[in-house]
Length: 550
Image 1 (spheres, rainbow, N blue to C red):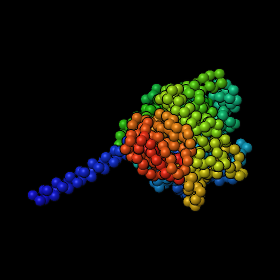
Image 2 (image 1 turned 90 degrees about the vertical axis):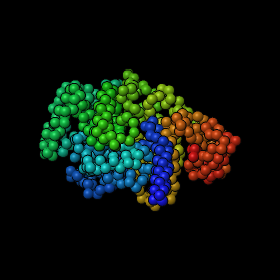
Image 3 (image 1 turned 120 degrees about the horizontal axis):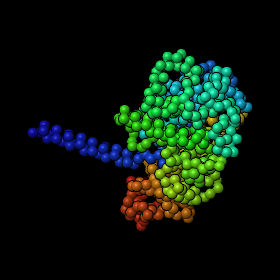
Image 4 (image 1 turned 120 degrees about the vertical axis):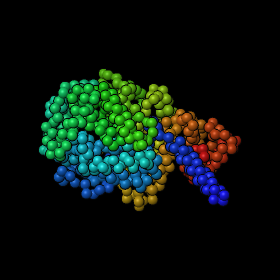
């Protein structure tokens, strides 16, 4: 009888512990619900973030002297995975990583007035079907996606359909039924933005063509040498039979890009040079991405993170949130959202933050995202890889950069090194190379000033990741006296934020969301407070509060 009683107690204790643990996990899952409209995306240049494998630093004899920051620097997929394992992204509140393209780049270099350049940035494709060995291997990418998903982090790759890489002594031009080599774009009309080359020596894919084309001879030769020609052709035959698409250039590339979905389970694509291709192309691309994602989830049900659809965010250069769903391209207005993109990169925020008070910025974004853009989103940034006019090029305002980027409604894009004030003014560089230096890990390790800046980014980032209401909730101004206090609400997720407040004792009105007697946590100061008379009193050395219910 004693044994039975003992076993009963053990089962009861275990059951209680299990239930308690389950409740904690369930609470955590609810707390960290993920929506793309409020995501915190980390954008990095694969080659410039972290070198996890020094054995792959040189390939295809890319050894010529380059212009400053125009060659490969050693960053790779393993380096990114390493930082995920270390918890770097989790501590920063990142729930999605966008990597520059990892497909095989041209083998040679080109000099267009910047000094010799190699394809370190990933936008000069030679073979969409293969990962460039400088970035890593298929096994490396599989591990990265698996480890990222295990840590609740989505993975975005970067899609280029608009052009091939430049022509070099090692990289012949693709056939004339695949690409045009001129005229250069003048950008003064729809036609002169699409049926042209972006820059000199960047062959433009004939995305308008529905004519069947054969594989480029250089790809056939390459695949045969690598022993995979028959397999690649077999897969292409299957794709074109299934879809019924003509064997036109764009559909080959779509097949190759969607293979990364079915094989690796990536969660989305950032799409390059969107306005330089017919808008119907992106509707076709979305259909193929959705089909590939559905196939992946069917075949890998145990690996599916949630019910979110495949995410497509487009780079329509100079699109602004003020454009709503209608972008003016020459004489034509185009809706890139419906049946194509979930979101577009917003090129406006840096100007808004410079020219408008915080209250006006937040109210504007909240209004547009809940009216003109309802059901869609924008990807906000203050620094990027090819924007020569970032919000804070001298890195004099790293705290304001974090506060405005991470608290503005919409999806946030943290550019690698924003959180560590990585130098954007590198002496001796030409053009956008100055924005692309190697990640300043040593500053993070050794400089107290950098560590303090990083801490601010981490607190705001974690709060944003914990609360989808920050980016995707309804914004309401509570007060703009002695600083700014506002609430954000999305379904059951409710938070109150104060910025530019006085340091020391702060009295905050919270009655619009929280009842007397409720316990709240100021996440920024890690301080518990209780609601009394519709208010909370926070005594901290900070001018910011991030209030959440305990």
